[in-house]
Length: 231
Image (tube, rainbow, N blue to C red; front, side, top):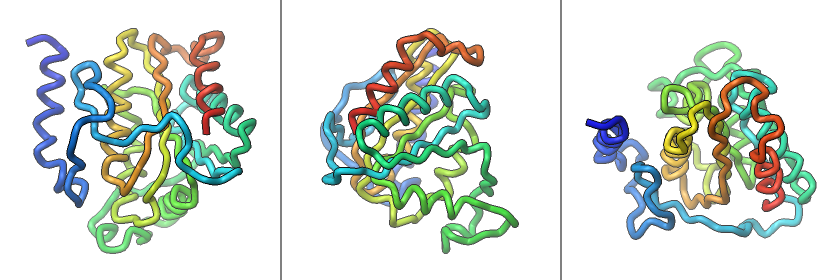
């Protein structure tokens, strides 16, 4: 079986458990965007213009690159520039600076539970709740996102403060095939679809960028900057 067919089969199997995993029924209806490279696209509303009626929007950029100054991290910096120029109150967090404990049974009862000394997940989730716009970013690792970002997503379980947010996505990968970048976007959407009333605003998918600093001089930096200006 071709590589893409195998990968698609592995992804489609767990979708039957989707409603249970999210804790609510999956959204139904026609997709707002087409199927992308064999991966199903969740029915998340998309808007080219902001749905937030504020002059100075609060923007939280979550950089999950393990390399400070890595390609994904540099894309985040350009997004920050654009969003700041557009009047946003922007905060970028480099996720590797924080200690995030894995999701445990106790968190299903009280998401703010701290079981390990120094666990900063509740503080980070609070920042996400306070933001109008959240930028999720990660390089592609083993056809998925960075493990620390996935752990933070897990810690958002049952948090009611994440309703009505706008989301942007940023990823970079060494592979020249856009289907590889789509695996990170798919992971972002798997999180976002489980939140109440989300809106997608756009994404940057930098492909063929592996070496640290390889993004320099590429059009992807300008793309991230221009995307930031759309807040």
